[in-house]
Length: 364
Image 1 (tube, one colour):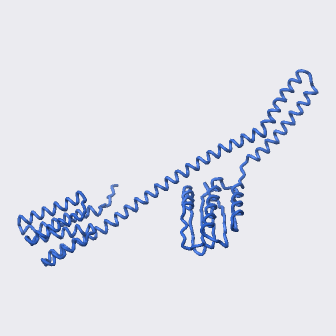
Image 2 (cartoon, one colour):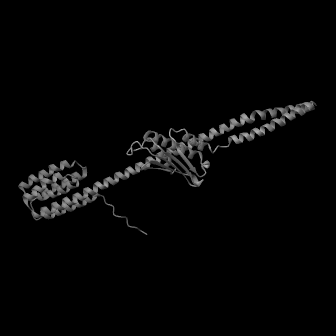
Image 3 (tube, rainbow, N blue to C red):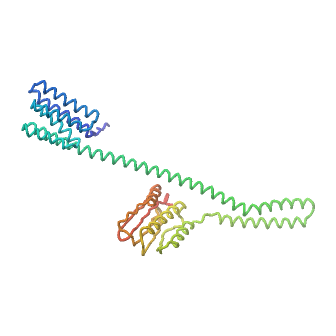
């Protein structure tokens, strides 16, 4: 099924269409005059308009052509009819002051047809100017929006790349830590047990049963000790989920002002990258409180649901209620949160409240 495309026309195209119509109107008026000089003036006017349209010259140059037509109209009065074309041009270019001489000429000749042509020229030119201005504003607004979206996508790409690099480095560091723990805890004991077994075999071959029994006993002791070391190492290797929560508690307890801290939900199930965002956000918020407030009360609430983490930080005692807290810290915080589809909002009434939303991936 074929669909009709909507008519899409811009102010410049409509300006040209109306200009052509103006010339046809002008031509229909001068045909009865049948004066060669009038037709030469008509051709001059057409050439002048086309030249400005083709090369987009400065509108001030058009004033020279207007003055030429005004001078010619002294010798050929019918030439003053051409001036309404210039009024249309100057209205479209927002040069209304250049229309004043044309209005004066109209009062001198006092010709009703010229008044009608002049009025419609000014009206159409003004409408097209306003439309062109709004159109240019909308285009610039759209370009600015596309630029901001592009910059946001670039920031998001860099943040995700940094997060992936950090996660990869963390995995490598964790592997190294596990290797060191296993080497320190089990390497020595298992090596000693392996050598003791070889010694046991040698003693059996030499019929030294008593010494072989003592060696075998030591092997059993080393293996039992190694098993105990293995259990302890596994417990040590397991990630401590409460580390992020402990870091947050430490940060709150060591702040210069007292903070009423409350939390709800299973805070220990949050992944390390979420804790990193929480700690980063709290540090930035507390830094801003130190800079911009002398608070009597600070509250911090951490709520964990199945799908989001909501962090609310509120304080009173703002030094200046009109102070705009829009530094790099908050901007970077917003960029990091938006990179994972999170958000940060600010509420300023009697207090300053920072509300941070962090989505939990897959609701887990």
